[in-house]
Image (cartoon, rainbow, N blue to C red):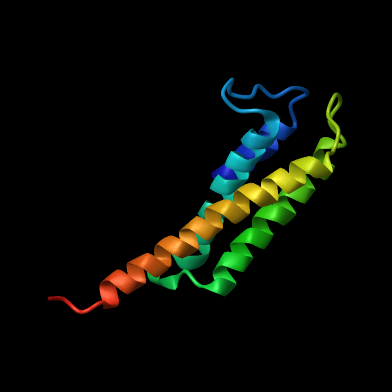
Amino acid sequence: MLWAALIFVLSAQPSVPTPSQLNDKEAHAVAYATLASLCLMGLTGWRWRSVAGSRLLGAFLIAVVYGVTDEIHQSFVPGRVPDVADVLADAAGAGIALTAAGAWAILLDRRSSSPRL
């Protein structure tokens, strides 16, 4: 997945520029919200009707485990250190994005199953 590769490449840099409007933890949350959303779409074949609890959980676990491995990877990069707070920000971003995706899927399902007047 290209997004995961981008995260890996950025993690291998001694210093990563963060957009001026985001702090480090917000940047982590946005990056992992995107990763979790892409994982969810991969697990569902880009079908909103396939969004279910098990797939949401799967996407969340993939994103968080990748965040943990990313921090381990950073421990080998000069000038970088692993940080549990980064993993928590990753998990928060993934959780927020997947909660929104799950809510959206429920709304779409209700809309399509509601009787037409």
